[in-house]
Image 1 (cartoon, one colour):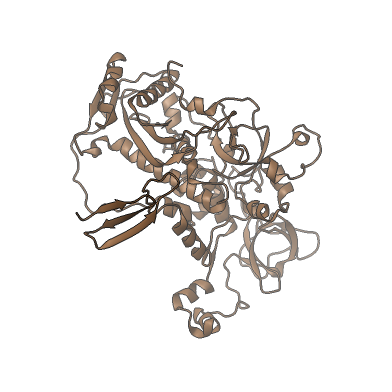
Image 2 (image 1 turned 135 degrees about the vertical axis):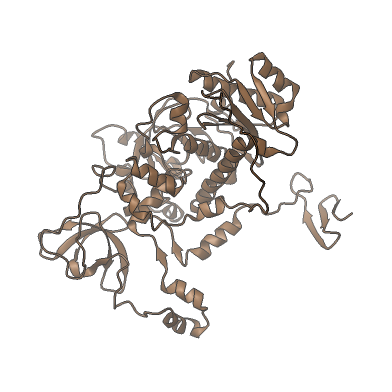
Length: 555
Protein backbone atom coordinates (compact mmCIF):
# COMPACT_ATOMS: atom_id res chain seq x y z
CA UNK A 1 0.00 0.00 0.00
CA UNK A 2 1.19 3.48 -0.80
CA UNK A 3 -0.40 5.18 2.21
CA UNK A 4 -0.74 3.80 5.74
CA UNK A 5 -0.74 4.67 9.45
CA UNK A 6 0.98 2.55 12.08
CA UNK A 7 -0.40 3.40 15.51
CA UNK A 8 1.02 2.71 18.96
CA UNK A 9 -0.11 3.60 22.43
CA UNK A 10 1.34 7.13 22.46
CA UNK A 11 2.43 7.87 18.90
CA UNK A 12 1.69 6.98 15.30
CA UNK A 13 3.62 6.97 12.04
CA UNK A 14 2.04 8.24 8.85
CA UNK A 15 3.53 7.01 5.54
CA UNK A 16 2.43 8.29 2.14
CA UNK A 17 3.42 8.52 -1.52
CA UNK A 18 4.45 4.84 -1.76
CA UNK A 19 6.74 5.08 1.24
CA UNK A 20 8.67 8.12 0.04
CA UNK A 21 7.47 10.32 2.90
CA UNK A 22 7.06 9.54 6.57
CA UNK A 23 5.99 11.49 9.63
CA UNK A 24 5.76 10.44 13.28
CA UNK A 25 3.49 12.40 15.61
CA UNK A 26 2.42 12.19 19.25
CA UNK A 27 -1.15 11.48 20.30
CA UNK A 28 -3.19 14.21 21.99
CA UNK A 29 -4.97 14.14 25.33
CA UNK A 30 -7.74 12.05 23.75
CA UNK A 31 -5.15 9.35 22.88
CA UNK A 32 -6.37 9.33 19.28
CA UNK A 33 -3.96 9.38 16.28
CA UNK A 34 -4.82 12.89 15.12
CA UNK A 35 -2.38 14.65 12.77
CA UNK A 36 -3.00 18.35 12.27
CA UNK A 37 -1.99 19.70 8.89
CA UNK A 38 -2.14 23.38 7.87
CA UNK A 39 -4.01 24.32 11.03
CA UNK A 40 -4.23 27.92 12.20
CA UNK A 41 -3.19 31.15 10.59
CA UNK A 42 0.57 31.26 11.15
CA UNK A 43 1.30 31.72 7.44
CA UNK A 44 -1.17 34.58 7.28
CA UNK A 45 0.47 36.25 10.30
CA UNK A 46 3.92 35.85 8.79
CA UNK A 47 2.76 37.38 5.53
CA UNK A 48 1.18 40.36 7.31
CA UNK A 49 4.39 40.93 9.28
CA UNK A 50 6.51 40.94 6.15
CA UNK A 51 4.03 43.06 4.21
CA UNK A 52 3.89 45.70 6.94
CA UNK A 53 7.36 46.91 5.92
CA UNK A 54 6.07 47.98 2.53
CA UNK A 55 2.32 48.45 2.91
CA UNK A 56 0.66 50.03 5.95
CA UNK A 57 -3.09 49.31 5.85
CA UNK A 58 -3.85 50.32 9.44
CA UNK A 59 -6.53 52.97 9.97
CA UNK A 60 -5.53 55.95 12.07
CA UNK A 61 -8.01 57.05 14.72
CA UNK A 62 -8.38 60.56 13.32
CA UNK A 63 -9.46 59.35 9.88
CA UNK A 64 -12.30 57.04 10.91
CA UNK A 65 -15.91 57.44 9.83
CA UNK A 66 -17.05 58.79 13.21
CA UNK A 67 -14.59 61.68 13.19
CA UNK A 68 -15.99 63.18 9.99
CA UNK A 69 -18.53 66.00 10.06
CA UNK A 70 -21.93 64.33 10.54
CA UNK A 71 -23.78 67.19 8.84
CA UNK A 72 -22.08 66.59 5.49
CA UNK A 73 -21.13 62.94 5.79
CA UNK A 74 -23.84 61.62 3.48
CA UNK A 75 -24.27 64.68 1.26
CA UNK A 76 -22.55 65.79 -1.91
CA UNK A 77 -19.11 67.27 -1.42
CA UNK A 78 -19.05 71.08 -1.19
CA UNK A 79 -17.43 73.00 -4.00
CA UNK A 80 -13.76 73.83 -3.30
CA UNK A 81 -13.30 77.30 -1.85
CA UNK A 82 -10.16 79.40 -1.58
CA UNK A 83 -8.78 80.21 1.86
CA UNK A 84 -9.91 83.55 3.20
CA UNK A 85 -6.36 84.83 3.57
CA UNK A 86 -4.64 83.90 0.32
CA UNK A 87 -3.71 81.01 -1.90
CA UNK A 88 -0.93 78.76 -0.69
CA UNK A 89 2.36 79.65 -2.33
CA UNK A 90 3.58 76.03 -2.53
CA UNK A 91 0.30 74.39 -3.63
CA UNK A 92 -1.03 75.00 -7.12
CA UNK A 93 -4.67 74.08 -6.42
CA UNK A 94 -7.49 75.56 -4.34
CA UNK A 95 -7.69 74.40 -0.75
CA UNK A 96 -10.95 73.45 0.95
CA UNK A 97 -12.02 72.01 4.28
CA UNK A 98 -11.57 68.25 4.40
CA UNK A 99 -8.84 68.21 1.77
CA UNK A 100 -6.03 65.73 2.32
CA UNK A 101 -2.56 67.26 2.61
CA UNK A 102 0.91 66.30 3.74
CA UNK A 103 2.40 68.00 6.81
CA UNK A 104 6.17 68.49 7.30
CA UNK A 105 7.13 69.04 10.95
CA UNK A 106 10.56 70.48 10.13
CA UNK A 107 12.42 67.48 11.54
CA UNK A 108 12.37 65.35 8.43
CA UNK A 109 8.98 63.75 9.15
CA UNK A 110 6.03 63.92 6.76
CA UNK A 111 2.53 62.70 7.67
CA UNK A 112 -0.93 62.91 6.05
CA UNK A 113 -3.39 65.39 7.60
CA UNK A 114 -6.85 66.76 6.85
CA UNK A 115 -7.26 70.51 6.32
CA UNK A 116 -9.69 72.13 8.79
CA UNK A 117 -9.47 75.83 7.83
CA UNK A 118 -7.52 79.07 8.27
CA UNK A 119 -6.95 80.92 11.52
CA UNK A 120 -6.83 84.63 12.32
CA UNK A 121 -3.05 84.59 12.50
CA UNK A 122 -1.74 85.33 9.03
CA UNK A 123 -0.47 82.20 7.28
CA UNK A 124 -1.41 79.80 10.09
CA UNK A 125 -3.94 77.04 9.41
CA UNK A 126 -5.57 74.23 11.38
CA UNK A 127 -5.16 70.59 10.33
CA UNK A 128 -6.31 67.28 11.87
CA UNK A 129 -3.69 64.62 12.53
CA UNK A 130 -4.00 60.86 12.39
CA UNK A 131 -4.66 60.59 16.15
CA UNK A 132 -7.65 62.96 15.87
CA UNK A 133 -5.94 66.01 17.39
CA UNK A 134 -6.02 69.41 15.70
CA UNK A 135 -2.85 71.50 15.43
CA UNK A 136 -1.99 74.91 13.97
CA UNK A 137 0.74 74.97 11.31
CA UNK A 138 2.23 77.41 8.87
CA UNK A 139 1.17 77.11 5.24
CA UNK A 140 4.79 76.51 4.22
CA UNK A 141 4.62 73.18 6.10
CA UNK A 142 1.74 71.88 3.99
CA UNK A 143 2.01 70.12 0.65
CA UNK A 144 -0.32 68.26 -1.65
CA UNK A 145 -0.56 64.57 -0.88
CA UNK A 146 2.28 62.69 -2.64
CA UNK A 147 3.74 65.98 -3.92
CA UNK A 148 7.47 65.63 -4.72
CA UNK A 149 9.72 67.51 -2.32
CA UNK A 150 13.37 68.31 -2.91
CA UNK A 151 14.14 67.90 0.77
CA UNK A 152 13.47 64.16 0.63
CA UNK A 153 16.87 62.48 0.35
CA UNK A 154 18.00 60.14 -0.97
CA UNK A 155 15.95 60.57 -4.14
CA UNK A 156 16.58 57.24 -5.91
CA UNK A 157 16.03 53.64 -4.83
CA UNK A 158 19.66 52.82 -5.57
CA UNK A 159 20.71 55.49 -3.07
CA UNK A 160 18.91 53.48 -0.40
CA UNK A 161 20.70 50.38 -1.57
CA UNK A 162 24.08 52.04 -1.10
CA UNK A 163 23.22 53.16 2.41
CA UNK A 164 21.69 49.92 3.72
CA UNK A 165 23.72 46.79 4.36
CA UNK A 166 26.63 48.05 2.25
CA UNK A 167 24.82 47.43 -0.98
CA UNK A 168 23.64 43.91 -0.23
CA UNK A 169 19.96 44.91 -0.24
CA UNK A 170 18.14 43.65 -3.36
CA UNK A 171 16.96 46.31 -5.77
CA UNK A 172 13.31 45.25 -5.38
CA UNK A 173 13.48 45.63 -1.59
CA UNK A 174 15.27 48.95 -1.93
CA UNK A 175 12.49 50.24 -4.17
CA UNK A 176 9.87 49.13 -1.65
CA UNK A 177 11.73 50.76 1.23
CA UNK A 178 12.28 53.96 -0.75
CA UNK A 179 8.62 54.19 -1.67
CA UNK A 180 6.60 52.55 1.13
CA UNK A 181 2.88 52.75 0.58
CA UNK A 182 0.77 54.35 3.29
CA UNK A 183 -2.96 54.80 2.90
CA UNK A 184 -4.14 58.38 2.46
CA UNK A 185 -6.79 59.72 4.89
CA UNK A 186 -9.51 59.15 2.29
CA UNK A 187 -8.28 55.61 1.65
CA UNK A 188 -8.29 54.99 5.39
CA UNK A 189 -11.89 56.20 5.53
CA UNK A 190 -12.75 53.81 2.71
CA UNK A 191 -10.97 50.95 4.48
CA UNK A 192 -12.80 51.83 7.70
CA UNK A 193 -16.16 51.41 5.97
CA UNK A 194 -14.89 48.25 4.32
CA UNK A 195 -14.13 46.71 7.72
CA UNK A 196 -17.34 47.93 9.35
CA UNK A 197 -19.54 46.62 6.54
CA UNK A 198 -18.20 43.08 7.01
CA UNK A 199 -15.53 43.43 4.30
CA UNK A 200 -18.05 44.41 1.64
CA UNK A 201 -16.54 44.49 -1.85
CA UNK A 202 -15.24 47.92 -2.82
CA UNK A 203 -17.40 48.02 -5.96
CA UNK A 204 -20.48 47.61 -3.76
CA UNK A 205 -19.21 50.31 -1.39
CA UNK A 206 -18.90 52.67 -4.34
CA UNK A 207 -22.44 51.75 -5.35
CA UNK A 208 -23.68 52.62 -1.85
CA UNK A 209 -21.79 55.90 -2.01
CA UNK A 210 -23.21 56.68 -5.44
CA UNK A 211 -26.75 56.14 -4.14
CA UNK A 212 -26.15 58.32 -1.06
CA UNK A 213 -25.93 55.65 1.64
CA UNK A 214 -22.22 56.40 2.21
CA UNK A 215 -20.16 59.58 1.87
CA UNK A 216 -19.84 60.74 -1.71
CA UNK A 217 -16.17 61.51 -1.20
CA UNK A 218 -15.41 57.78 -1.25
CA UNK A 219 -15.97 57.81 -5.01
CA UNK A 220 -12.64 59.62 -5.35
CA UNK A 221 -10.90 56.33 -4.51
CA UNK A 222 -12.32 54.46 -7.49
CA UNK A 223 -9.04 54.71 -9.36
CA UNK A 224 -6.87 54.08 -6.30
CA UNK A 225 -8.53 51.29 -4.33
CA UNK A 226 -6.44 50.02 -1.38
CA UNK A 227 -5.72 46.36 -0.81
CA UNK A 228 -7.28 44.46 2.09
CA UNK A 229 -4.87 41.74 3.22
CA UNK A 230 -7.61 39.73 4.95
CA UNK A 231 -9.71 39.74 1.77
CA UNK A 232 -6.76 38.64 -0.34
CA UNK A 233 -6.22 35.64 1.93
CA UNK A 234 -9.82 34.94 2.85
CA UNK A 235 -11.09 34.77 -0.74
CA UNK A 236 -8.12 32.80 -2.08
CA UNK A 237 -9.16 29.52 -3.67
CA UNK A 238 -7.88 26.97 -6.12
CA UNK A 239 -8.24 27.98 -9.74
CA UNK A 240 -10.21 25.53 -11.88
CA UNK A 241 -7.93 23.81 -14.33
CA UNK A 242 -10.77 23.20 -16.74
CA UNK A 243 -14.11 24.78 -17.53
CA UNK A 244 -17.34 23.05 -18.36
CA UNK A 245 -19.41 24.07 -21.31
CA UNK A 246 -22.67 25.94 -21.04
CA UNK A 247 -25.33 23.83 -19.42
CA UNK A 248 -28.77 23.49 -20.92
CA UNK A 249 -31.71 24.67 -18.86
CA UNK A 250 -31.79 26.89 -15.81
CA UNK A 251 -32.19 26.24 -12.10
CA UNK A 252 -34.53 29.21 -11.84
CA UNK A 253 -37.78 28.47 -13.63
CA UNK A 254 -40.01 31.02 -15.36
CA UNK A 255 -43.00 30.04 -13.23
CA UNK A 256 -41.10 30.95 -10.05
CA UNK A 257 -42.18 34.56 -9.66
CA UNK A 258 -42.78 34.95 -5.90
CA UNK A 259 -40.54 34.24 -2.89
CA UNK A 260 -40.91 30.63 -1.86
CA UNK A 261 -41.85 29.36 -5.31
CA UNK A 262 -38.37 27.86 -5.59
CA UNK A 263 -35.36 27.55 -3.30
CA UNK A 264 -32.08 25.68 -3.32
CA UNK A 265 -30.89 23.92 -0.16
CA UNK A 266 -27.48 22.55 0.81
CA UNK A 267 -25.28 21.99 3.85
CA UNK A 268 -21.87 23.23 5.00
CA UNK A 269 -19.69 20.97 7.16
CA UNK A 270 -17.03 22.44 9.45
CA UNK A 271 -14.16 20.43 10.89
CA UNK A 272 -13.57 23.27 13.37
CA UNK A 273 -16.13 23.21 16.22
CA UNK A 274 -18.04 26.45 16.55
CA UNK A 275 -18.99 28.28 19.75
CA UNK A 276 -22.63 28.06 20.82
CA UNK A 277 -23.70 31.37 22.44
CA UNK A 278 -25.27 31.28 25.90
CA UNK A 279 -27.03 33.96 27.88
CA UNK A 280 -26.68 32.39 31.33
CA UNK A 281 -25.92 29.18 33.18
CA UNK A 282 -23.00 26.80 32.92
CA UNK A 283 -21.17 26.76 29.60
CA UNK A 284 -22.13 23.86 27.38
CA UNK A 285 -19.61 21.48 25.88
CA UNK A 286 -21.69 21.18 22.71
CA UNK A 287 -20.51 22.90 19.54
CA UNK A 288 -21.70 23.76 16.06
CA UNK A 289 -20.40 21.45 13.35
CA UNK A 290 -22.19 22.71 10.28
CA UNK A 291 -25.00 24.74 8.78
CA UNK A 292 -27.88 24.38 6.36
CA UNK A 293 -28.08 27.13 3.73
CA UNK A 294 -31.19 27.96 1.74
CA UNK A 295 -31.35 30.45 -1.14
CA UNK A 296 -34.58 31.84 -2.55
CA UNK A 297 -34.55 31.76 -6.36
CA UNK A 298 -36.63 34.89 -6.86
CA UNK A 299 -35.11 37.37 -4.39
CA UNK A 300 -31.66 35.81 -3.84
CA UNK A 301 -32.31 35.92 -0.08
CA UNK A 302 -29.94 33.67 1.92
CA UNK A 303 -30.80 31.85 5.13
CA UNK A 304 -28.16 30.15 7.31
CA UNK A 305 -29.25 27.70 10.02
CA UNK A 306 -26.47 26.60 12.37
CA UNK A 307 -26.52 22.93 13.42
CA UNK A 308 -25.01 20.85 16.21
CA UNK A 309 -25.00 17.85 13.88
CA UNK A 310 -26.13 16.98 10.37
CA UNK A 311 -28.72 14.37 11.27
CA UNK A 312 -32.10 14.08 9.56
CA UNK A 313 -33.87 15.52 12.60
CA UNK A 314 -31.68 18.65 12.65
CA UNK A 315 -32.03 19.05 8.88
CA UNK A 316 -35.83 19.01 9.12
CA UNK A 317 -35.62 21.58 11.92
CA UNK A 318 -33.59 23.83 9.60
CA UNK A 319 -36.18 23.39 6.85
CA UNK A 320 -39.05 24.32 9.17
CA UNK A 321 -37.17 27.31 10.54
CA UNK A 322 -36.83 28.60 6.97
CA UNK A 323 -40.51 27.99 6.28
CA UNK A 324 -41.41 29.98 9.40
CA UNK A 325 -39.44 32.93 8.03
CA UNK A 326 -41.31 32.56 4.75
CA UNK A 327 -44.62 32.45 6.62
CA UNK A 328 -43.79 35.61 8.59
CA UNK A 329 -43.08 37.37 5.29
CA UNK A 330 -46.38 36.19 3.80
CA UNK A 331 -44.97 33.45 1.56
CA UNK A 332 -45.09 29.66 1.33
CA UNK A 333 -42.38 27.18 0.29
CA UNK A 334 -43.43 25.24 -2.80
CA UNK A 335 -40.32 23.64 -4.34
CA UNK A 336 -36.81 22.64 -3.24
CA UNK A 337 -33.73 21.98 -5.33
CA UNK A 338 -31.19 19.80 -3.48
CA UNK A 339 -28.28 17.40 -3.70
CA UNK A 340 -28.87 13.74 -2.95
CA UNK A 341 -27.18 13.33 0.46
CA UNK A 342 -29.32 14.00 3.51
CA UNK A 343 -32.13 15.53 1.48
CA UNK A 344 -32.78 12.24 -0.30
CA UNK A 345 -33.70 10.53 2.98
CA UNK A 346 -37.25 9.25 3.23
CA UNK A 347 -37.95 11.41 6.28
CA UNK A 348 -37.11 14.63 4.39
CA UNK A 349 -39.25 13.57 1.43
CA UNK A 350 -42.14 12.72 3.75
CA UNK A 351 -41.90 16.17 5.34
CA UNK A 352 -42.08 17.77 1.88
CA UNK A 353 -45.11 15.64 0.98
CA UNK A 354 -46.83 16.56 4.25
CA UNK A 355 -46.55 20.26 3.37
CA UNK A 356 -47.55 19.78 -0.29
CA UNK A 357 -44.04 20.62 -1.56
CA UNK A 358 -42.05 19.21 -4.44
CA UNK A 359 -38.34 18.47 -4.53
CA UNK A 360 -35.87 17.81 -7.34
CA UNK A 361 -32.35 16.40 -7.08
CA UNK A 362 -29.04 16.81 -8.88
CA UNK A 363 -27.48 13.99 -10.85
CA UNK A 364 -24.71 11.98 -9.22
CA UNK A 365 -21.57 14.15 -9.22
CA UNK A 366 -23.45 16.98 -10.99
CA UNK A 367 -23.25 19.62 -8.25
CA UNK A 368 -23.49 22.35 -10.87
CA UNK A 369 -27.17 21.49 -11.10
CA UNK A 370 -27.47 23.01 -7.63
CA UNK A 371 -25.12 25.85 -8.55
CA UNK A 372 -27.13 28.67 -6.96
CA UNK A 373 -26.65 27.50 -3.40
CA UNK A 374 -23.21 26.02 -4.13
CA UNK A 375 -22.00 29.48 -5.17
CA UNK A 376 -23.61 31.07 -2.10
CA UNK A 377 -21.82 28.54 0.11
CA UNK A 378 -18.54 29.57 -1.48
CA UNK A 379 -19.23 33.27 -0.87
CA UNK A 380 -20.39 32.58 2.69
CA UNK A 381 -17.35 30.54 3.68
CA UNK A 382 -14.86 32.90 2.04
CA UNK A 383 -16.46 35.95 3.64
CA UNK A 384 -16.59 34.31 7.07
CA UNK A 385 -12.96 33.26 6.73
CA UNK A 386 -12.01 36.83 5.79
CA UNK A 387 -13.65 38.33 8.88
CA UNK A 388 -12.04 35.69 11.10
CA UNK A 389 -8.60 36.38 9.66
CA UNK A 390 -8.98 40.11 10.20
CA UNK A 391 -10.17 39.65 13.78
CA UNK A 392 -7.39 37.20 14.62
CA UNK A 393 -4.79 39.50 13.10
CA UNK A 394 -5.95 42.55 15.04
CA UNK A 395 -6.80 40.84 18.36
CA UNK A 396 -5.15 37.40 18.54
CA UNK A 397 -5.51 37.17 22.32
CA UNK A 398 -9.30 36.77 22.19
CA UNK A 399 -10.50 36.08 18.64
CA UNK A 400 -10.26 32.41 17.65
CA UNK A 401 -11.48 30.11 14.87
CA UNK A 402 -14.31 28.98 17.18
CA UNK A 403 -16.13 32.22 16.31
CA UNK A 404 -16.91 31.03 12.78
CA UNK A 405 -20.70 30.70 13.45
CA UNK A 406 -20.92 34.45 14.12
CA UNK A 407 -18.87 35.22 11.03
CA UNK A 408 -21.13 33.00 8.93
CA UNK A 409 -24.25 34.71 10.28
CA UNK A 410 -22.71 38.14 9.70
CA UNK A 411 -21.84 37.21 6.14
CA UNK A 412 -25.43 36.13 5.45
CA UNK A 413 -26.63 39.45 6.87
CA UNK A 414 -24.23 41.31 4.59
CA UNK A 415 -25.47 39.46 1.54
CA UNK A 416 -29.12 40.13 2.40
CA UNK A 417 -28.91 43.77 3.51
CA UNK A 418 -25.88 45.36 1.85
CA UNK A 419 -25.79 43.83 -1.64
CA UNK A 420 -27.58 46.65 -3.44
CA UNK A 421 -28.80 46.14 -6.99
CA UNK A 422 -28.94 48.79 -9.70
CA UNK A 423 -32.55 49.60 -8.84
CA UNK A 424 -31.58 50.29 -5.21
CA UNK A 425 -33.19 47.14 -3.80
CA UNK A 426 -31.58 44.46 -1.66
CA UNK A 427 -32.41 40.75 -1.34
CA UNK A 428 -34.05 41.45 2.02
CA UNK A 429 -36.22 44.29 0.70
CA UNK A 430 -37.39 42.15 -2.22
CA UNK A 431 -38.03 39.19 0.07
CA UNK A 432 -40.28 41.22 2.39
CA UNK A 433 -41.75 43.34 -0.41
CA UNK A 434 -40.65 46.69 1.02
CA UNK A 435 -39.00 49.69 -0.56
CA UNK A 436 -35.30 49.79 0.21
CA UNK A 437 -35.10 53.56 0.69
CA UNK A 438 -32.55 53.49 3.51
CA UNK A 439 -29.79 51.18 4.69
CA UNK A 440 -28.63 51.72 8.30
CA UNK A 441 -24.93 51.56 7.50
CA UNK A 442 -24.17 53.58 10.64
CA UNK A 443 -25.25 50.67 12.84
CA UNK A 444 -22.61 48.31 11.44
CA UNK A 445 -19.32 47.76 13.22
CA UNK A 446 -16.22 45.70 12.60
CA UNK A 447 -16.91 42.11 13.57
CA UNK A 448 -14.95 40.89 16.62
CA UNK A 449 -13.81 44.41 17.54
CA UNK A 450 -13.40 45.39 21.23
CA UNK A 451 -16.55 46.62 22.95
CA UNK A 452 -16.53 48.51 26.24
CA UNK A 453 -19.57 48.41 28.49
CA UNK A 454 -20.12 51.65 30.39
CA UNK A 455 -21.26 51.83 34.00
CA UNK A 456 -24.32 53.60 35.37
CA UNK A 457 -22.61 57.00 35.54
CA UNK A 458 -22.74 57.29 31.73
CA UNK A 459 -26.26 55.98 31.21
CA UNK A 460 -28.16 59.18 31.94
CA UNK A 461 -28.07 62.57 30.26
CA UNK A 462 -26.24 65.18 32.28
CA UNK A 463 -24.29 62.59 34.21
CA UNK A 464 -20.56 62.62 34.81
CA UNK A 465 -18.10 62.53 31.95
CA UNK A 466 -16.48 59.43 30.52
CA UNK A 467 -16.22 56.78 33.24
CA UNK A 468 -12.99 55.35 34.41
CA UNK A 469 -11.65 52.83 31.96
CA UNK A 470 -11.90 49.35 33.41
CA UNK A 471 -10.62 46.96 30.73
CA UNK A 472 -10.49 43.76 32.75
CA UNK A 473 -14.08 44.02 33.96
CA UNK A 474 -15.92 45.80 31.16
CA UNK A 475 -14.41 44.65 27.91
CA UNK A 476 -16.19 42.40 25.42
CA UNK A 477 -16.02 41.08 21.87
CA UNK A 478 -18.54 42.32 19.30
CA UNK A 479 -20.25 39.34 17.65
CA UNK A 480 -22.69 41.07 15.31
CA UNK A 481 -26.30 42.19 15.39
CA UNK A 482 -28.98 40.62 17.53
CA UNK A 483 -31.47 38.39 15.66
CA UNK A 484 -34.21 39.46 18.11
CA UNK A 485 -34.04 43.24 17.78
CA UNK A 486 -34.07 45.80 15.01
CA UNK A 487 -31.50 48.55 14.66
CA UNK A 488 -28.10 48.64 16.29
CA UNK A 489 -28.50 46.17 19.14
CA UNK A 490 -25.13 44.51 19.63
CA UNK A 491 -24.25 41.04 20.81
CA UNK A 492 -21.27 41.09 23.16
CA UNK A 493 -19.18 38.16 24.36
CA UNK A 494 -17.91 38.44 27.92
CA UNK A 495 -14.42 36.86 27.77
CA UNK A 496 -14.44 36.26 31.53
CA UNK A 497 -17.70 34.29 31.73
CA UNK A 498 -17.99 33.13 28.10
CA UNK A 499 -21.61 34.34 27.96
CA UNK A 500 -23.13 36.28 25.05
CA UNK A 501 -25.74 38.97 25.65
CA UNK A 502 -26.85 42.49 24.72
CA UNK A 503 -25.64 45.28 27.03
CA UNK A 504 -26.75 48.70 28.24
CA UNK A 505 -24.39 51.34 26.81
CA UNK A 506 -21.40 50.25 24.76
CA UNK A 507 -18.44 51.88 23.04
CA UNK A 508 -17.12 50.28 19.85
CA UNK A 509 -13.45 50.32 18.92
CA UNK A 510 -13.88 49.49 15.24
CA UNK A 511 -10.20 49.86 14.42
CA UNK A 512 -8.80 47.92 17.42
CA UNK A 513 -6.93 51.08 18.44
CA UNK A 514 -7.13 50.20 22.14
CA UNK A 515 -5.67 46.70 21.83
CA UNK A 516 -2.00 47.81 22.22
CA UNK A 517 -2.96 49.73 25.38
CA UNK A 518 -4.59 46.61 26.85
CA UNK A 519 -1.30 44.76 26.55
CA UNK A 520 0.53 47.61 28.29
CA UNK A 521 -2.17 48.18 30.91
CA UNK A 522 -2.53 51.88 30.04
CA UNK A 523 -5.55 54.07 29.33
CA UNK A 524 -5.77 54.89 25.59
CA UNK A 525 -5.11 58.50 24.65
CA UNK A 526 -8.13 58.50 22.37
CA UNK A 527 -10.54 57.18 25.02
CA UNK A 528 -12.57 60.43 25.51
CA UNK A 529 -12.98 60.87 21.75
CA UNK A 530 -13.81 57.17 21.33
CA UNK A 531 -16.42 57.46 24.07
CA UNK A 532 -18.17 60.45 22.49
CA UNK A 533 -18.06 59.30 18.86
CA UNK A 534 -18.51 55.52 19.04
CA UNK A 535 -21.08 55.11 21.81
CA UNK A 536 -24.37 53.34 21.16
CA UNK A 537 -27.35 52.33 23.25
CA UNK A 538 -28.37 48.70 23.29
CA UNK A 539 -31.17 46.97 25.16
CA UNK A 540 -31.14 45.32 28.57
CA UNK A 541 -33.75 42.76 27.53
CA UNK A 542 -32.54 39.22 28.09
CA UNK A 543 -33.05 36.29 25.77
CA UNK A 544 -31.54 32.97 24.79
CA UNK A 545 -29.61 33.48 21.57
CA UNK A 546 -28.90 29.79 21.05
CA UNK A 547 -32.61 28.99 21.22
CA UNK A 548 -33.38 31.61 18.59
CA UNK A 549 -30.98 30.03 16.14
CA UNK A 550 -32.68 26.65 16.62
CA UNK A 551 -36.23 27.94 16.61
CA UNK A 552 -38.66 25.92 14.47
CA UNK A 553 -42.14 26.47 13.21
CA UNK A 554 -43.77 24.36 15.87
CA UNK A 555 -42.09 26.02 18.84
